[in-house]
Structure formats: C-alpha cells, structure tokens
Length: 260
Image (spheres, rainbow, N blue to C red):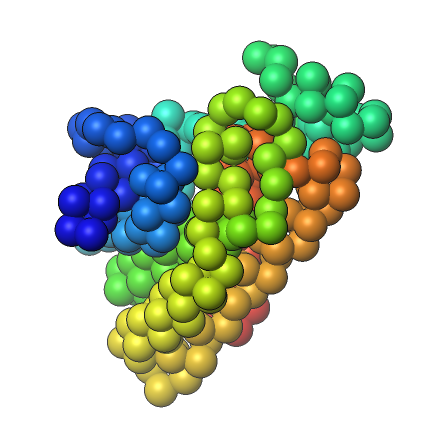
C-alpha cells in the first residue's frame, strides 16, 4: 500500500504539473491512487501561486499584478495544459456537431473562436476576483488562490469516479476515467471541503462557511460541465478534464467574490 501511494503521488504530480517528478508506473491502479492525490498536487500549485502573488503584493506591486502573478503560476506549472483543455472543450461543445466530429475538432492543434472567448473570459474572471481578494490584503488573496487550486484538482478526482466512461480508447482521459471508487471520491471531497473550511477561519468568523461553500460551488459547476460533456461526447477526454479543472477553479473564486 505504501508503494502504491508513492506511485500515486508521483502519478498525480507527474501528470498534473511540470514539477520534476518521474512517473514510474502507468496503469489504472496507479491512476486511481494518483487521482485521489490530485488535491495534494493542487495544494502545492496553490501554495506556489499564492507565494508569488503575496510576495509581489508585499513588494509594492499592487493587487492587480499580484492577481496576474497568482493566475500565471498554475498556467506555467501545467504548461497551459488545463487551459488548452478548456479551450478545446469549448470548441467541441460550441461546434454543435455530433460527438465524433466534435472530438475530432478537439484534437486539432489550433484554437477556434469559442475556445478563445472562453479562455479570455475565464482568465479575466480569475484575475478580477483575485484583484479584489489581494486588495483586502495578501492573506485573503493567498487563501483564495490556494482554495481555488485545491478545489480545482478535487474536481478531477470526482470526474475520475467509477461510472464516468472515456470518450476515446486512448489518452490520459482513458487512463484515469472510471478509476476512482465513488465512495473514495466522496470521502476525498468531504475531507477537502472540511480542510478548506478550516483554513477559511483565518479570514474571519464566517470564513469557514464561505470557503467551504466556495469548494462546493466549484464542484457543482464542474459537475454540470462534466454531465454536459458526457451527453455530448459520450465520455470524458483529457481536454474535458482540463475544462473541468479550470471551471472549478473559476467557480470557487466567483463564490469567494460574491460572498465578500
């Protein structure tokens, strides 16, 4: 079990980040363990993003540049993989074509108008919320950054649950789709929501409720997108996972902004 957990952590960091972690096993058993560890990868990404944003603010940059820094770090740590997946998913859904044709559009290397518009709006939303949070102080911005990153990767854990099929027989989506038992996915969700709520107490008496709701809002938005993709494509792909992740991150931040 210890060995499997070690391989799972390597899988999570090796596939969800560009951190120098070598994936030593590539099978569905390791994928299951890896996707359960996805929130841990989100925590590390979030902490690094929060560190750069906070240092930028403390150095006198102002909240806007701090917000941009915190949005840029996750993009850099994934080589834009999730953002690219979001754009491809938007192009596939926006095409209005049958599943096979839509999946072919998503595999193309270029980005269409739906993808460009979606990327622009999502990044603007993320920067706008973090601008508000950093405007309240570095701790607010840092906490929001970390919670959004963790919630986004938790959405990947839930999207990998059993019963969610792959749209294609190959690729990362096929490797991780349906690997996580539903009970373990739910347990991971409960634990993550509780930890994020506990961290939220740092921002005030209502912080626990606010940050817990942010994670729940992220998961709800991600689930809506996931179900729509299942209906349109017949399953998930690596691009859909990217879209789910970015949707969850943005939704978490929006909830934090609405309750501010």
